[in-house]
Length: 214
Image (tube, rainbow, N blue to C red; front, side):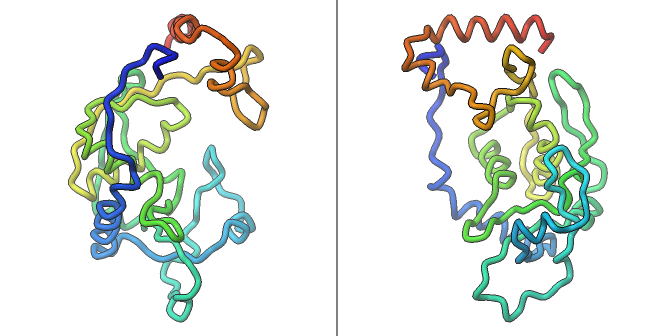
């Protein structure tokens, strides 16, 4: 961050907040909005094709299925999306670029809120973190735009404040493809260690975003 000329405010590590994540999950469980799922990733992949940009939309195969007697096997807790949406009604959130949005988290299906062996998941943790840290504007890439629909629903279910959002365009390679480890794109640490000027790189990226209108 210093290399790129960015400033930040220190916040506690997520590992110090495990009890708060567990308490939030317990609340949703008590409200009847979570159910256990013992499916493995292989079993989920074998289910009929699902929609969703990430291909992880879960059709609720474990809903209503008792896992009693499987206590020795780890299981996750999933959000009963139909029940949660019926409980919440119409919800909205605001993006600084895309404007007012109707929350529609159905793309992900019954998303995991408590992972096997952990008291939380990305969706639950970041939603609680934003509230505890007093975040009023969440800034992140467009690849997480769909996730915000889930987070808005969780904010309602847990009685949390609703920040504004800004989902910016992603930094692409010269061929227009997304930078990623799978395509052997160099990490920022690699570029820093190679002697590149971080301030100059950050300026180039800002200019590229301005030209792209994001």
